[in-house]
Image (cartoon, rainbow, N blue to C red):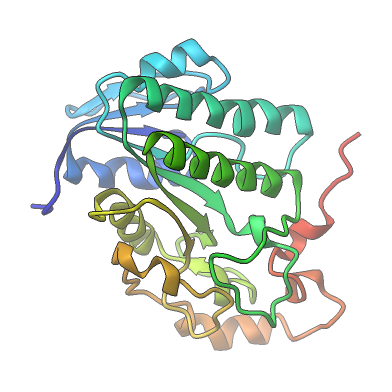
Length: 267
């Protein structure tokens, strides 16, 4: 049995890729799991409450956070898109979430940010969590906005947030870049639970990565969360390096954001 059990957790973006990964896993940490998305959620498990909502609907989000102990916020657009989509889901939506948390007295949020907040740093640089943002896309800009909004709501209202700059959360690493960015699904669970249960989170940014030998990110400043990854991309290293030799002209091997640095335009 987990050491810290919540009465009710909220998982937004529950119908998305990572939402589907975390939805069954979070059941072990709460009595009731409220799951939300604008897409179909399927049938509710015995411990679940289905609560479909659009993040841009402030009234719906306010109701969504009623009676919630903590939030795992995966909702929103998770790839690059036209600005209007990003604006509504990732900017208006995250504002609505924090306003609802303030009004409903919710004091802990785990926010799915992204490595694309810092995508225009080069792969030969090692970044701590205080480097200035260098987003590679409008998507990355929206996640930087979310991190800054969370900071303000912590300083002004005492809402604690752990911002997860998630790398590449896939069943196994799929390309050379993921030798640095890969986050296993088990380590994703460990990361989220560390964010939910750390005794004091404040406003903390942490990179979401497994224990990979290739390191672009330094989580020393987030050590108080107690996140300890156990998996590694290294068993796939020889295979992936053979399939994808080094090429200095390849953006995916130059910039930390990989191919995202070339996405767009949007008209």
